[in-house]
Image (cartoon, rainbow, N blue to C red):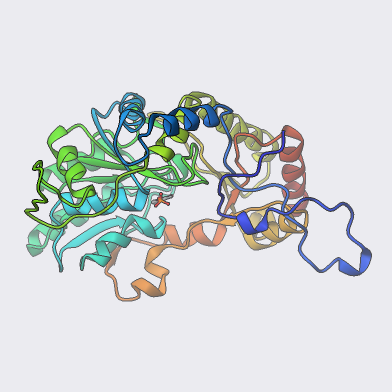
Amino acid sequence: MSVAPVSTLSQAAVIPFPGARPAEDRQAPAPRTLLLSPPHLAGDEMEELKATIESGWLAPAGPTLAAFESRLAEATGMGHVLATVSGTAALHLGFRLLDLQPGDEVWAPSLTFIASVGPAVQMGATPRFLDVDPISWTLDPALLRAELSAAARRGRLPRAVVPVDLYGQPADMPTIAEACAEWGVPVLSDSAESLGSLHHGVHAGVGARLAALSFNGNKIITCGGGGALASDDGGLIQRARRLASQAREDAVLYQHETTGFSYGMSSVLAAVGLAQLRRLPERVAARRAVHERYRDGLSHIPGLSFIAEPGWARSNRWLTVIGLDPARTGTTREAVRRALEAEGIESRPVFKPLHLQPAFRDAPRAGGEVAARLFETGLCLPSGSQMSQGDQARAIALIRRACGA
Ligand SMILES: *Cc1c(COP(=O)(O)O)cnc(C)c1O
């Protein structure tokens, strides 16, 4: 079956494979035939869409949306869920619920996607970037604890801490939440990449005051775009729901105590999400199998490493990421990326740490250079749940060759 991807980060690069390239064209990059994380259709999206459209409930209200939200509550174990237009919108609502004010600090790991702090910065907050743990690549809880107690002494605690479940690897939430609780600082978990991941037997993000999810086209399941805000606190999600629909009060006339957003997810997108969400356990299993095949094929290479999965974690392995130590592998992240690209295989450097971004030149930071080092050496590999074993074997063979192994 040939179905065009709903949306991917690399949409522009999806070109049909034209066969062998002429010799004079060897310098041009090959068309990408193997993408990092393309959408994987469940097969019954059209049926859900048809039923939803025929129901007449297209707006961010109605039975399809309610069903999607309640399935998400079941899947995450967080009792209350609001579906939103994007993960970034969910984070924005989260910061608003935590009453973030201009001049407040928001703390996040430096090794993350810019959306973890983007809305907070737009609200006038100062981001402070903490280094990550070299084993789990997520927010270093010991550093967080030390920084919180120093901040308490300075009399300037953050308004929120935003741990991130990087590439599906859950942050160490109990330790983070305990440190934050000691100082009364709320936790907003950026769980955009970790739907289906577990920590300590519960879903990623559980233990935070609020958690944000994403259904962007490249995530483990997608609505084509979308997100959700989840919490165990029903009152918070009720407030979020009101803010997401222009802060309209329950009155027939237009009554507003404050201003809000237009952030509710359309029922049309929720229909796609409903079909996708049913496949979540299969998608997690498939991504974990992809990860295991990379390990089997690559872990013997000296100087090549993977994000470790602590005993208490079960990552959805949204993306498999390798670290390449140049001194021991005899190659670099960039050389491997180019070798894959020449064969039409997409891979990407790990997120450039936020403390190195021009946008955050002056932001305060804490900790060492772990994030910066992982950025220099880390490469995200094609990890789609639909990737064939043949395609993956091709990627593995190229990485081995680049490492002389
Ligand atoms: C995808 C992502 C987001 C943003 O989600 P959108 O739905 O694209 O707005 C936020 N944080 C992280 C870590 C992400 O990977």
